[in-house]
Image (cartoon, rainbow, N blue to C red; front, side):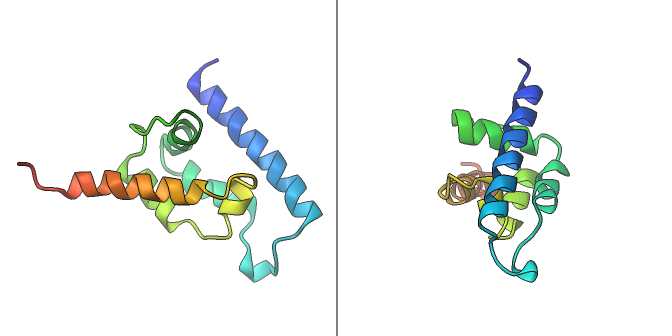
Amino acid sequence: MEATSKALMFWLAVTCIAAVASAVAPLGSAEATQDLGGCIKSFASVEGCVEAIHDAVTHKVFDGLKHECCTAITQLGDNCWPLLFPDRPAVPLFLKAVCKLIEGDAAAPPY
């Protein structure tokens, strides 16, 4: 199965789980939460970001996490993470830490 197909299947599974979880236990008031479509859109609007997140979370492969994707990760609202990864609360911390390391390496002067 091609990488794009795997990533799309991964996000479809996340979407289904999040839909069931939010129907069973709503996360709070309307202004405190974002809808799942809006959460996914912030990643989907950055080319290759969905696949890069999938590879990072599933396979611990980080070379696809580029600056634009890391920006989307760090700017994503805290209310989106439980929708995207309902059973993996450490994912946002993990991705943000990896992005910080990647961004730090990119900003470091060459020696």
